[in-house]
Image 1 (cartoon, rainbow, N blue to C red):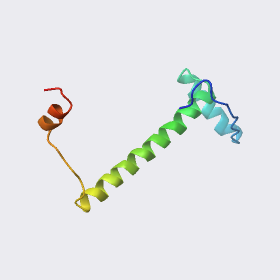
Image 2: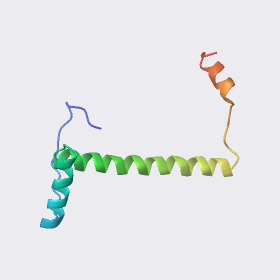
Image 3: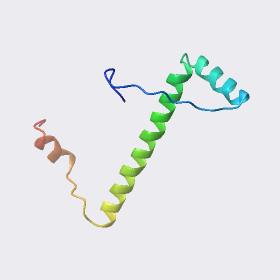
Image 4: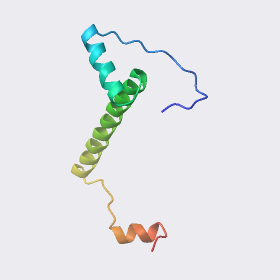
Length: 82
């Protein structure tokens, strides 16, 4: 997310009265403001998309036989943990 020194911008979202009420009620139930609830939901969507992209890249590399895999013990030794 952004640092506190970063320039901030405003984001306006248009909703129906019913959508606003439901979002507001749910945010309040979670103990959050609408802004913090919306930002968390958007960041979660972005993180989920990035996870899907990482899995796709892994699967493509696996299919292309371009993965270099090492076992757990070798990784621990390489990291100086064993």
